[in-house]
Image 1 (cartoon, rainbow, N blue to C red):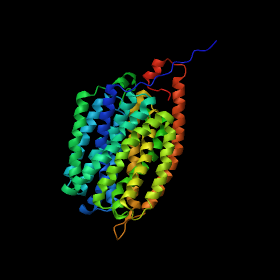
Image 2: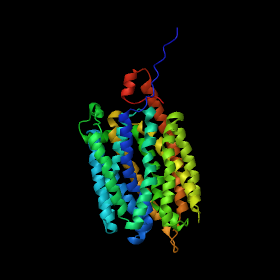
Image 3: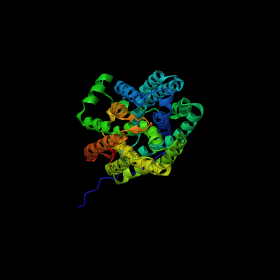
Image 4: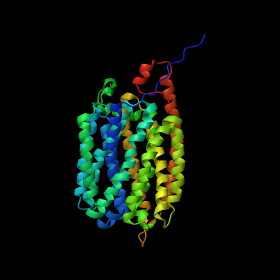
Length: 432
């Protein structure tokens, strides 16, 4: 007698409201990512105008990460206690205020303080958005969702950075921050008016107070590996990106006028790489995509950090390949790690994970500032040393992500075992 096969879970297409959520979260991420990324191309302008050293500029980048780390830890205990929509609006308003303060900065110390304020609020936004995505979308669709949301990275490259650089070249380095604060009002208003409350997690939250909830999440042995892996994940971008524009101009021989084309063309390809990485993550496996992206990124980093004078077309081609690897790593790793926490811990887990990421990224940026020195001719020295450090961290991260993948697979298999389909779908843990 044939045994009845368990019902196969369908892969429903996105509803109209789900498309809206993906789009608005991507728009919001665009403003947050642009605020961080704009510091890199502005480095070539900021260092001479504010008369600061590479080490000081490294701190101007890293204080954002340090303050974001602190706020993430402080917010973690409360992250599952409130409607996620309200939390998102609160922190986003603070982020816009911080960005406006950056635009008003008149000296290095004012800018440093403004970056701290921006980080206190901006650092939590990504974790709240991740918790919303994990609440609303099952693991079998989460790769595609992450791919579309991470397109914000490409949009910031194509539209944000070139426009910001043009404004900076014409009106001064303050203008890109005014642009971000102004454009950032749009997603904030739309979220306040049209996004539905996200409160399902409140029904299964049993911890009596935020500190108890924070303590339980931090002490959960099943989450420790994810936090450690995130530590290495942040190293690459925070080490290389802050000095990218200065390296391009002083070492590769590009001009300030070349940077909009460099970032813009590279970003256009990110429109393709983000969704493609998400599709492949759901189709062939998230860890396989992560490994492929890591290997590609390591090869490109080895080439890029050892370049001398290089034609613009060659630099653009190398950057396109670099972004292909980065997007594959970002999308696949985010989707994998999002499956680790239990539903009642998602907000706290994402906040702590974001804090770990920001802390490690801040330390990496500060370390990069100490490794990099400026030669008499203005060229950055020891950039290849950063490349070696980044490649070593990527290799270690690839090994650690293997065990993350094993942990996720065991969890999904256990959850999907003999339980009713409705219960599986309710927890949004569906076998790929």
